[in-house]
Image (cartoon, rainbow, N blue to C red; front, side, top):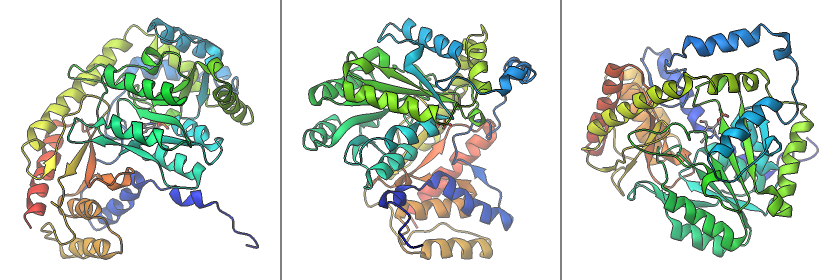
Amino acid sequence: MRKKLLRTGADELSYEIRGIVKKAEQLKKVGCEILWENIGDPVQKGAKLPSWIKDIVSDLAQQDSSYSYCHSKGVLETRQFLAKRNNALGGVQITEDDILFFNGLGDAIGKIYQYLIPPARVIGPSPAYSTHSSAEAAHANDHPITYSLDPQNNWYPDMDELYLKVKYNPNIVGIMIINPDNPTGMVYPLEILRRYVAIAKEFDLFLISDEIYLNVTYNGARGYSLSQYIDDVPGIALKGLSKEIPWPGSRCGWAKFYNKEKDEEFGKLCTTLENAKMIEVSSTKLPQVALPKIMGDHRYPDYIKANNEKIGKRSQVISNILKPCKGIYFNPTSGAFYNTIVFKKNVINDKQTLAIKNPEVKKIVEDWVAQPDVLPDKRFVYYLLAAKGICVVPISSFCSDLRGFRVTLLEENEDNLKKTFEGISEAIDEYINS
Ligand SMILES: Cc1ncc(COP(=O)(O)O)c(C=O)c1O
């Protein structure tokens, strides 16, 4: 090419959650059976949607109007439905004009950071769902700026670190929160959420809260929506259909803008996002039309409750198996459907292995770990995959300096769930002592 094509930020785009699948598929080809613990798609893991939800969707599929474009902000009645539900929580009140639909939250996340000027930075958690950290870093042509979630303190954010980073970096214009969190499975109490707001007020920032798992809480936990604690700070709450219904293939998510009239620059960001959608004409229509029919159905609350109870039980099964393991930090989860297990300092190194009977598989994993720059947690993950057929994601791929791995709480079959986590427990012990 006569000119360089890419911005330096393009190097920040990586998604190991999918990358590990390529490795697992290589092992599948040589006959290994894989227990997939890498992706947060309940449907791929065997979740069955009730027939009443499928009936709603199939009725809509029979109507010609479902096949047209819709309003560029999203279907009016659906935005009205969502504004009403938001307002019933009693916090910041919005109208349908404060809601903007996207083709999944992935689309929203990409666009929110894309239009900020490169020096304007949004600080996010570490570890983090990497779509946020990668998209933010790509816009800035730099590495992500992060605050730590602490595995030795329930995975709660280190608020003192956040405060100091914001105080001494005037480029930080916003703080990103994921609540309930991917990848840690933690749900934050109101006191912590209010501290985010206090920092945003003191330094004139906006907040972004990814709440895609807000209604996935269990074992007594309660999730708070940004509207309930943000007060008069400008902010964006992100929601979607992928996890709750669950309908990830719908590619349907939305942003709710709070207090956009309270700050001119923030108001312009909201308008820019609306304009960005306008030039695309519209987001996916059918799931938007289905949304109020599904979420407004009298069966929906019980359906969600039953799903959450199932995840909560799995969380307990996993705790019973992994909590006693030596050499790791383990925190029982209370929201979303992931857990992150972290190795204690200096517990893993680049010499440890797991026994692998099949010589062909052994050769494959030895080739993988012989590649340059394989971090210690990636090495463990590769051995776990080769020795036990269990596919998890290294935590170093979630914008983190910690060494560990993320699992899901989505295995529907109880025997497979126990087999998977007993396999992980044995592997941790054998690897550490090898
Ligand atoms: C925290 C978080 N936000 C957003 C997304 C993306 O959701 P969508 O399927 O709506 O793009 C995910 C998907 O795993 C997620 O975990």
